[in-house]
Length: 182
Image: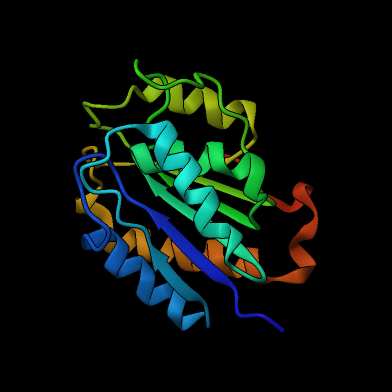
């Protein structure tokens, strides 16, 4: 049996081991998951990031869970069409922004959770909410800015529950997914 792997895709201006990724990687390890945090620092091309993420996943055996923040959220979503992860955890995903090839990316994952800040001044709230509604994602709107740093401990709690659902074989039915919580 293969160890599940959580792969993090960071945002455009951040790095592979920022505050959120460090906190969430501890949760992943608690669940017995291997953790990979891709280093795309300095790579501002979202489509190149997508292809590199897909290449990374090709070397992984077993269950894959993708986590993305901002540009990394877009990257993880687009990559999910090929990777087909057990879960997709998106933080302030870069939807509805110019410069992204796929303006309506289609997520493919058994579990889909999105966290977005009410005070996000970089990614339009409406684009993320419309995406969540269209794909029946679990959506959490929190009092935070784009980086969600005000909510790191809360993010860890939500991620813990999310991973539990991803790794639970009884949770294969999409109808079990809870809808938006505001």
